[in-house]
Image 1: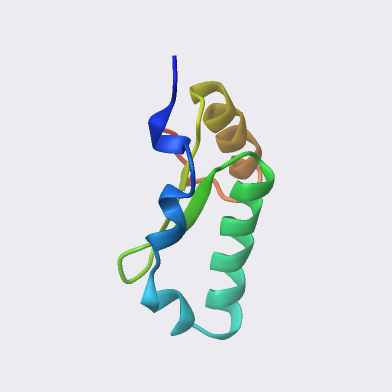
Image 2: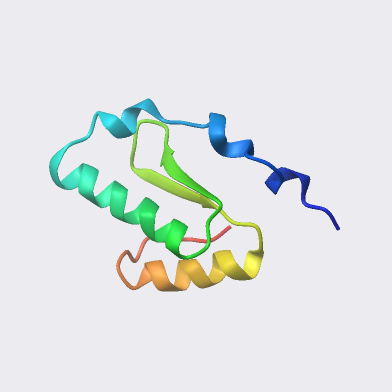
Length: 81
């Protein structure tokens, strides 16, 4: 089965202006969460809206679930859906 959602660079047009507004420990926390999602296999990760939620898009459910397990070691509020 071909995954057309993940072909090319679909996410290159996605952005969140609010991520640049944060500084200090908030910015550091968001950057850490987002970069960890990429390290754990996300094809895209960012801040949702004006904050308080980060998300990752994963190609496979198993990868997303594994990432959630790892991320929960640092942040107990992580959920996979």
